[in-house]
Structure formats: structure tokens, C-alpha cells
Image (cartoon, rainbow over all chains, first blue to last red; front, side, top):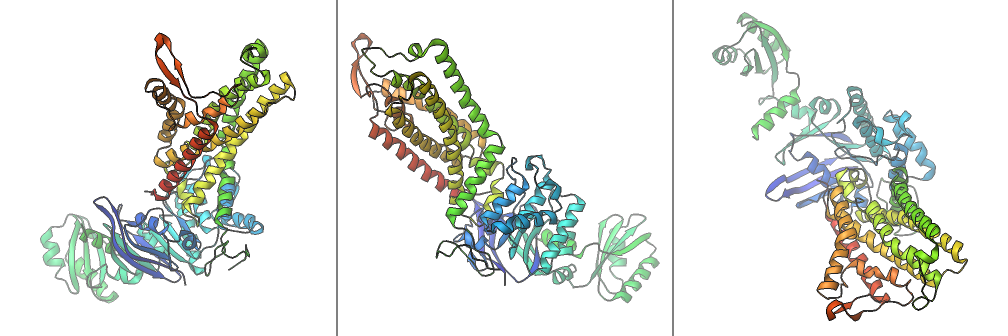
Length: 314
Length: 298
């Protein structure tokens, strides 16, 4: 069973601690989204797992092998994409992928077929024999993804894999990652795109200021959107609403646990109960005649959790 | 899926659920191969080759125009072998410049470029040791430089054959061997500087300044003004390339300068020169490798 384990992983740059005592154990075939703001320590973690940087303390293990002590063995079953690597501009994708294939020990007979297969998967067949120097950032990123897929590894370490891609490219990468899940692979993927993580991943790890805030299944994490484990709706208004109306009138409605004004014409309401309670809440809000023009569940429960957790650490 | 690539125990590496990896030696070969391909495709190799051909062309034209006996004179009292005078003029006066250019072209940004251009991110996140990358790239640079050196030597010998027939002095073979040793040392040194800096332009600039100006200047000051043998300077060791082509190998000896001032001219003996070049190579190659192993892709 593929696994990646961080044991007390710490990375310091002088007095600045980029990663603080990270403990994480991920096992099995799944996709784990690694979320956090800029500078939270996501890329630092992934770079330690690929031995691009050394941990100040702790260990990074892939399939039980310490990456720093035995990188060759640890990385033998890993396909990694860290930041947006550049490829020698004078080489073609075929050359670059041949190099990776030879480093990874693909037999000569299989190499050509496998390269064409992964290049087809990232929709770059037409560019296979063109020099990489002429490629856009998105095209290079597709080749980088192809390189990660090349040896059909057990574990994927992907650092914002859709960076630089257009919307179609992003959707295609998401499909690739989803297909990897069906092939029993472990994917550890950092991203800024919460909807992407919500769409692809089974589990979520959130990190901020180098510290792990939460690691749980997506459903458990999203249910934390409300502190009482309830629901969130967002109400949009025709006119401005004052704090007193929000705190006294809305917050006191049945099943409402809290209400907050996110802007003068928007209110977020946390409530408990089922769909019937939601219907009743809608009616009661309409009766308040506050100028309600829209009433809908919060766009992203994951985003709510993210914002709450990250805000809490400031 | 597990497949067998090598039946030799300890020669390849396998992990449960993963494929067998090539040996580190084999991975060095792969890096060398694609480094060379990159040189050829990026025209870097051909630019250096063109410079070598231009220098050769200029020397060929010079000899043809002024005559071999005028540009490489062999005076009766000081010279016993006209071919040796010719090879000394041609090879001895220009090959160190070609070697230094090779070092700058192929070694200057070999490692620093991996950081600055982020091409290292593509390579390092693979199952191979950093030492394999370093050695592979060094061998690639050496191979490309040797090709240029071989072509330059062929043109030199071609001219020698034209003017003197098959009478190639054995000292030329010695000088060629020392040139290769100097090339090895220069590449060790340039790779060290390339590992030291993260900026390609900085590593290239420092290497160029050191080899084209600084070392010669320091050597001149140390030996001429301070009167100390500059055994610690690589270019002093490389003096054996030209010295071996002289009719009488120069030695360290006191001389009386203008105004009756006594001074000493220094010349490294062949064993001293070889030792200086080897020490430079081993010291800088090991230091460069250690730096690259420790450097972080931040």
C-alpha cells in the first residue's frame, strides 16, 4: 500500500520557521489535497519529500523509505511535479521524456510507446518533436505532468499541477488525476483552488504558518464549515442591512445558531436542521421584509472551513 | 510490476511495487548523453567549434601569407627542429585559450543554470543521486570539449603535415596529453564555481575573469614582483603545455635584470605541472560536488 509519512518535519531558514513539526501519515489509494495560503509551507513540504531541500528536523518517508537517506529508492515509485520545472529549451518533449524514461529504467522497447501514450494523455501529440523553448508555460506544464506519469508510479507529489494552464487544460489535468485514483495511486496535491480539491480529492490537509491545522476526509472537513456541524446559507439583499437587524432579528430565528453580515447587502446564516428547516427559515426571512433577493447555500463549504481555519491562525 | 534489468547483485535497485532502476553509472551515462544532445541542439557546441575554426583559420592564413620560417623561425643557434618550432608557435601559443573557452562555454553555467533556469527541478525530482547529475554533466562538458580539442589538434597536425610531412615531434603528443589534463582541471574548476553561485551570469563572469585575466595577473605579480614561485596557480601548472614544445625545457633560474637587479624566472617542471593540475582538479571537483549535494532548490 503506497504511503507518505512526515515525522516531526521542520524546516528553518535562519530565524524563520517555514515548516513546524509537521506530522502526517497518508496511506492507501486516494487523493489528498494540501491546502494553505502563500508561504504556508506547502511547497516546502513537497520539496523535502523530493529531497530538493533538507529538513532541519524530522523525517520524510515514502513507502517507508527515508527520502534524504535513500533518495534513489524512495523516489523510484514517485512521480513528482514541484513548482513549474523548466526543460532544456533546445530539447523536444520526446528527448526530455526519453531522458526521464532512461533515468527511471524503462526498457527500450517500452520507452517509445510509453512516451507517446503519456504525451497523448496530456494532449501534446502534435508537439512531441518540437523544441520546448517555443512552448508556452501551460504547454511546458503538460510535458511536466507527462514526465510525472511516465513510469506509472505508485505515489504522485503534485505542487499546484494546474498552474499556468488554461481552463480546458485545468479540466484535463483534473481528469488525469481522477483517472489515477481509479488506478489505485496515492496522490498528494497542493493547490490554491478549493473547488479543484473539492472536485478531485478524498481527503484534505490544511497548513498555515508551517503548522498542520487539519487532516481529515473531505466530508468531515466540510462539515466543520459550521462550528455546530450545521448548514450555511447566504442571503443577498436589495438594500443595506444594519448590524442590529442581523444580530437581533435574524440570529433569533428558529434553528439559527449565528448570523453575520459579510458585506452591507449580504448575510451568512448558520443554522441546524434539515431541508424543512431551511424552507421555514426562508419564509421567516421573507416575513422580515429586509429586501431579500436571493437565498442559497454557501458556494463552498470547503472554502468556509478554509477561511475560518486560516483566519483563526492570524 | 517488477521487471529484471540487471542480474548482477547490487547493480540495480528495486522496491516492492516499483520497477528496477538503472545503476548510478548507467544514470551518469544518461545524463552525459542528454547533456551532449543539449549542447548540440542549443548550438553552444557549434559556436565554440566556430571560434576554434576561426583561430585555426587565422593561424593557417598567417603561416601561408608570411611563410612558416618567418612566423615560427628556427634559428641555428637556438633551435634544432623546425617542426617543433612550428608546433610550439601554433599549439603552444593558442591551445590554452581554446581550453579556457571550453571551460567557460560548457562548465560556466552547467550547475548554476540548473538553479537559475529551474531545469534542475525537472531532473532532481527523479530517482537519481545528485552526484550522478554532477558527474554526468561534467562528462558531457568534457566530451564536448574533447571533440573541439580533437578538431583543433587535427587542423594543427594538418598544417604541420603540409609544411613538414609526417615529421610530427613526439613533444606534440606530450603537449596534447597535458592539454587534456589542463582541460580536465579547468572543467573541475568551472564546475566548482558553477556550484558556488546560483546565478549563471555570475559563475560565467567569475570563471572568465579568473582564467582570462586574474590568474595571469596574480602569477605575474607573485613571480615577477614578489619573487615567489606561483605553484598554487593553475595557469602556472598549465605552462608545461607550451614549455614541453620548446627546444630546451625552461627551468627556474636566477637572471640579472635591467640595472643589475637580480631576479628569478620560474617554470614548473613536468611532474610539478602535472601535480598542480591534478590537485586543482581533485580539490575543485570534490568541493563542487559537495556544494551541489548540499545546495537547496529554494
